[in-house]
Length: 188
Image (tube, rainbow, N blue to C red):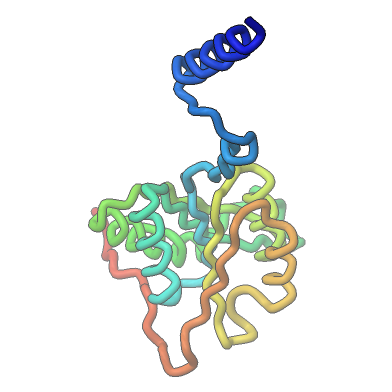
């Protein structure tokens, strides 16, 4: 009689497990590794009138494969003697054609683009403001060998520590001078 009760209990447990869509297995086999959410937004900060072709190509390829929105962001520096909201016509003349070129090239490859211009007292300050205001899943930075252009080494270290996202720092080989530059002539 006891054997029959144990057998019925085991069959009932088996039936409940099958109805729930699970077969009996030790608990450690049922736990699946948590998968990260899909990459949705990739930040591509820009500091000059051009960007490394390799960094741009990598950002577009990743955004295309991951169905992410590419967010090129021009970091505009505002001198201390001006208010942060001051107009920056020279920087806008440099930034807007480059952002338009990036948008056209990425859109031609089926990648969604959401371009931005962010102000700050330094490149790091502008990037900090962008990271504070919005969430990004990945940041792709184009590093250069030119100490007077773009991000400095300490800015890159700061970014690696500060960004709550995956950070890729791409520097082309010293002999690779290919760049994406503004090719958009006047619109009107």
